[in-house]
Image (cartoon, rainbow, N blue to C red; front, side):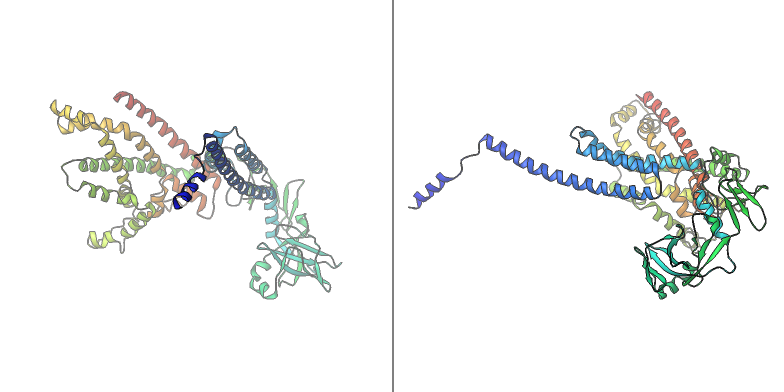
Length: 540
């Protein structure tokens, strides 16, 4: 009976799938996978589009029309690429191209744009912002000014004043937006709330007293109408400026002295005697920054010695790291040496540690008062490793040698192992000595492989910001220089200081220096690569 049931079960099993059934199942599986991929693609594009819409709204609010158009165009292209069946190659190229444009092309173009402007301290915004700032800085309370009941409100971290006029009308304004009518809630005759704004309680007003008392809300779009300010957070008074702005004539008049400051196109209001009042505004200055970078007498001296030191630092760093790395590579490439692998691991340890961390450790070791080198290595000697102009340069070179030789060691080790042993054996049979084999055979073949990396190393060290900033911060400071520059500053660290340190930050001049550095490195690289190509043809 059991055998009969077993046979029946076997008879009812599905037969082996036919070719048509297998194709049908494959199509169904592909359809299921295709649907999942479509869902993932739509979700990813939805996120990208949401970010693009948010960015477009922000740019629209700031009236950045060119960038807004670029964002809309890129978003449209991305959607077309990933929904089109014909743009298969573009689907793989688009992400890389977008990031290339965002992090490389845009940065270069924007740096070039800034280099042709006066963007910097005192010239950060538009002319309208400069006028508003100047007028606000000269505000004086109007004698017998009417008292306006106010309520301090906040939205998105921005403070505003909700003002009740003598006519019972509610007005709301901020430091950036002049007073405008608003549909407010009243408590008796006083406006106490506004849609989208949070009313600050008395304790909150006390906590932010300094911020509130410094707030000046423009009374209208005309800056000559003055602004409202509050001394206590409950009442506001009208303040008018001692400066009068004539938009049609483009002048700003000091009502106390009668001096008329005119807009001469230099990005600041200028008196007849040449005196400028700041803040000014951003304007295009053409090649003035480039001319000033190389002709300004105050900048000429530090620029010359910083440029010389930059070239010396880059060349010495490349040469020292290469020859030390090559020497170690030859030594550890000898098959008779025991423990080569262990030594090689030890040699690359400085390369494995982040450079900024190593530089900080070396800065501590080279401290003049309690550094390891002075206290232990040289027996308590008082050596100013980082404070003497000459020793500081030597210290930077030593630390950079420590950080750079492992890379050259790895490169030279690989290049030496790629040279056929037959060449060396043939030269030895012909009677060539080891030095001749190295000089006439190994070194030329080695340079064919290593020369492009030496060029790249030169470009890197020419702009090696980390080692200088972390070890010496460019010091010791050159007290005679008009800009905050030191004896170990490279061009790139000097550009950083021009742009981001000191009382006056000149982004336009710093951008001009950046472009000059780019041109220098590019020219040297092109010439060097041509020489490298000649070397390859010679060895070929």
